[in-house]
Image (cartoon, rainbow, N blue to C red; front, side, top):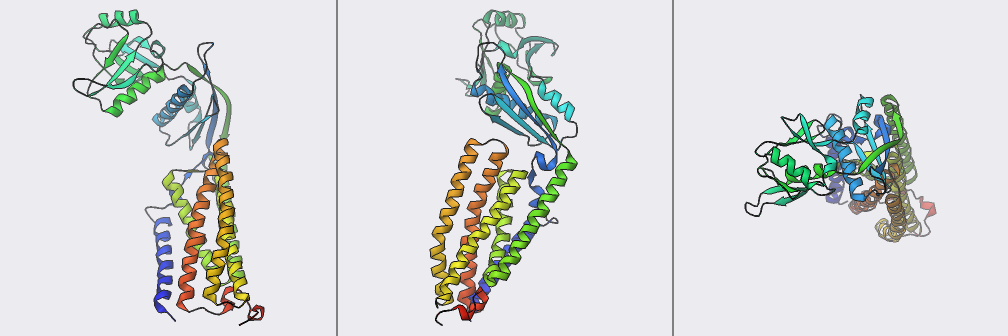
Length: 417
């Protein structure tokens, strides 16, 4: 018996489960399951679908305008104190907003339903001199002072004469920029501007200057939003759905583990270890990616566990066939792993292609399902193909378990010993 390889096998399992317990336990500060982002259908909240239309007749909804409007909605929700809302663009003129864990739904809906009001104000913020639609669409941009190389904001107004009158009247005074009732910046007018083009300078970073330029452009967007659909999910219902789904997934995983151990014995134990590792790795990866877990996502999760088990079954069945024809355990592992790898990769590759198609052409929950499925397949190959085979190789090379019985094969089934 090779005790070194047996020790390596034990250490691999000990380290793996040590990391899982350390990062996944509820007593741990990391607590990966506890930090998983839950979607609307699991946490409760509401979902709104808006249709964007041009304010001025005869104009079309441009993609850039739609993207900036979605960004505006996200900023307004964040400003309300709701962390990480889902704001998704669908098609050419629709924006879907999902907000989970909201206590005052009606107030937030009122905030979202009102268009963002950009104003330039004088007289200590009391008098509105310019509004967002006074500016040329996409007319504000980040620029740099040619002399100091400091970030500035260049902008263009539609009515040059109006801007001339304002700058002449307020020359040497402040003209504050507000988004709704929040002041963004408070520049001083230095000269009379007759061209309709101006710059805003100050001690801005490039990021701050770009944010101000984007906000001015946002105020000039010729879009209005009409609510065409709203769905509400209660927190209690969402929590109940989450608990039932997790319970069902746990029971299904336990049944699979028992089946694998009873039917495949020692390889079944290794498969169970790799499946637990796979589940932990999938949760960790989803957290690092910031993926929001929804009911369709959990469905993809459970489906992926079944596919992970399938990869082990294909390999172990091939190993059993090699043992039955009289090969040694080590030779059976090599031959079974080699012949099963092509089948496993073909099956996973076709599923990944299907997932990519769903993600490309699907929306909302369909994309969440597809993303979870693709990520889970990649991780399944890592854990249930390569990691499980590493454990099998260490165990077989140790010489501790060399009888066919340990691999689910009776000696009477072997054609030649």
